[in-house]
Image 1 (cartoon, helix red, strand yellow):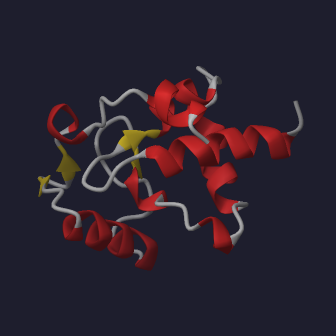
Image 2: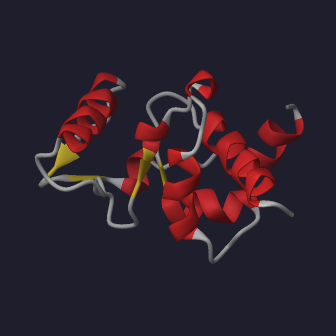
Length: 112
């Protein structure tokens, strides 16, 4: 499978995350079929064409934190977007038990 096809699978997972929920990089990789591919998620998001309108801000690290450097423009934008969706940060982290999406991605992806 080409890198572009891998990225398309990752983009499909990211598009499926509903408003007000998050997934970790590892969970996105697992749902896309790459259980050890958490590191490829960032590059896949970075190569997405603007017209994909991916909700990239819904992807956080396994500690429930934003991975961009603290205080950077991207980190501030990501936090703002998540808070606008009702996600609460406590001590700089999101409660994954509360906000991690537990939906059925298989059914979501097969509808595409």
